[in-house]
Length: 201
Image 1 (tube, rainbow, N blue to C red):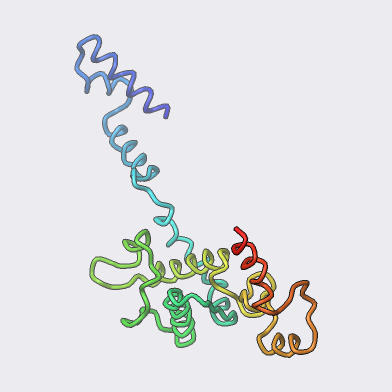
Image 2: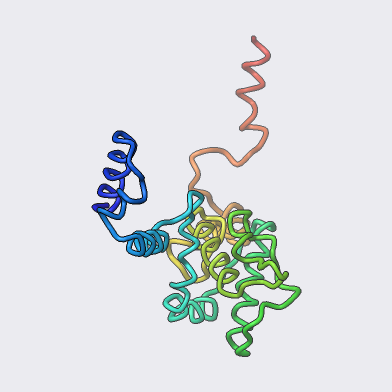
């Protein structure tokens, strides 16, 4: 920033006093130093369409410390059929880990990959980037677990919604003997007040 201010000040002076801009700049800093400074600045700055996904690949090895165990030992399920490709992708990753394969299979599911991940997962030559494929799947898994769309078997906080309910067989058994519900189980009795109301109105 100090160099930027010095160079900017020199350019302003050259403009106002009608001096040669290059000569004026070199009174502040040698030309080769200016060139090197610009190169260093390019390394530090990010493009206007910068996305933090650009940096994720450098963190891949850290993720690999636990993600193979995660996809191997945790079982995921969903009642939403549109999420089947994601669950299948996790199974593909587990199989690759077990067999030490590095390349994503040609028949690996891709429907879970959002447009934001496209330019990272799909390489120009048509290959699938293993690192970004795995990170896209795990990121989507995290989002879907948080939203309740995917359940984790054995989890207290992220179990299948139906596990919170009485099972059908248990309910069939209970409703024939006794019920703790404060309403009648008769469909006709439930609708009767509404029918009477509409009759008199």
